[in-house]
Length: 470
Image 1: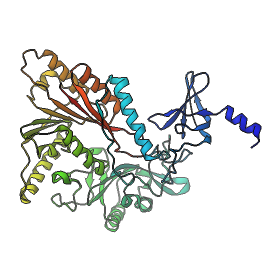
Image 2: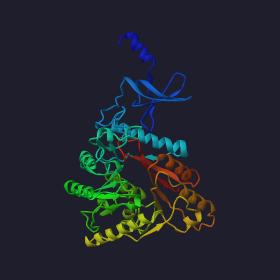
Image 3: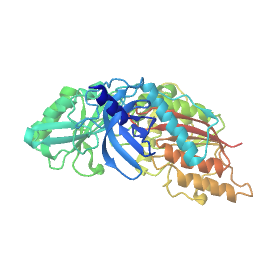
Image 4: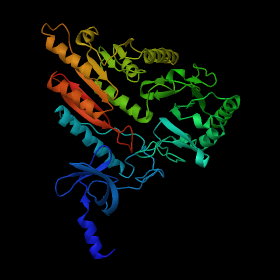
């Protein structure tokens, strides 16, 4: 490249100033226009292929990196990239892990301040687990490409509905990644190979379950193929011919056998959490163990405490809380989840007694749609000293609003609010919104908050925050 050409390229280059949560570099043109650059990292100077323009912003991808960031690293996964056909499952493999964590921590703090006008007294150390092979739940797309007589199984391509051509995956456990190619061969041998849009994966401590979605009935030949695969690769097949309620195991499974059951362990509390392959449960069980211990520590549970676990699910926090508290109430909108939470409670009590351990404190599970809970309904739960809130991405706005209304109406002091709330969040924006209500309306202070790196190499941010009454 001649000196004149280099000068021309540099004149058109942009300096990347920061990174957004979608892992896009952010730069500004001389006129102030914002440019989002996929594949660029903070402090890099790049040229950009612009593919979308609006009045106040542009989007594009990196064309040339003229000045490389010290934070840039080589992607571990061969399917990662910014090019057409690259897997869209991860967005940050080109950024070193410590910098990924810093970006997510900044996102949490920025959301708390800009959305909720809240600043934590203490910024907690980020919680971390394994960098790779952490994803124990996944939905793999399946496509039979007629023109190539080839089956593809994996995540979608970046910004596309097509399935990436993957032979392995670094974020899936090795035992699952090693199944990708054998699964291609299996699906290709089925009579319904063009009628199987997805395979869901659920890994337990000792078992792997695969849910095959099939739009047409399986033949006897198909079923035998699945059984042969199951025996050879030591997996359970579950079939889903229609909606989620149609999921059933291909062959009977003994639910009383730990060896054949899906579960993850919480060894710090001598607990096993059993689940079905269709249950929404821990994607990253290693970091979940750390997160549960952190939440319990931050709750500072005393023997006399009465606690509520809002959005309790299968009892992931409820049962560990019951190892320390006087009593616990777990509240969840789905009765099916509560039935399984009760199953976990009973099964763990039996195993603890058999091992000579103390049983869990009294636990009561209640079904309640927490997205429309009112102040009057909240008052019916009585006085509880501490709360654990673990909502889905929508957050816990109705619950927090009901709390603020009760405090506003409670001139006679007939209801006492919790002294401490630990809020576990999978969406920093809704956490910030709810934190704003707790701090600026209900009078709590945010004593601590920190990031949980539940999904390394992705843009997903989990976090934990503590709120206390002065």
